[in-house]
Length: 78
Image 1 (cartoon, rainbow, N blue to C red):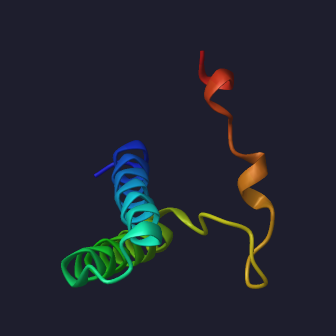
Image 2: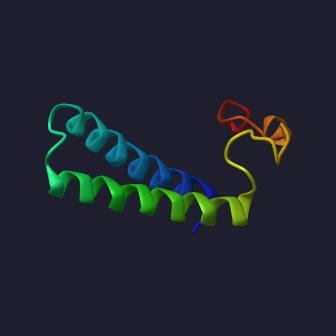
Image 3: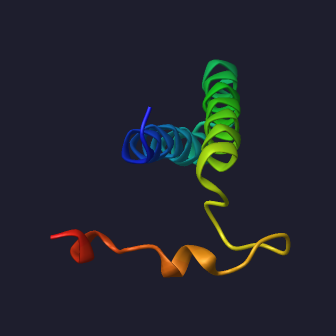
């Protein structure tokens, strides 16, 4: 799987997780929704770990640098 495909999957998992989060704001007692949120969260974390092992850090933190800023931006590839 290439970088763009991995980012798309990460984005989809993060979106699903966020949607469940918003739903749970108004339906906090929905156990099925809570379980689904945790499922999406685990999936996102797994995908994030896989992405970072192949392509490096996805976000700036204490254990990485701003090297990702040196990568070409999408508009640089045209």
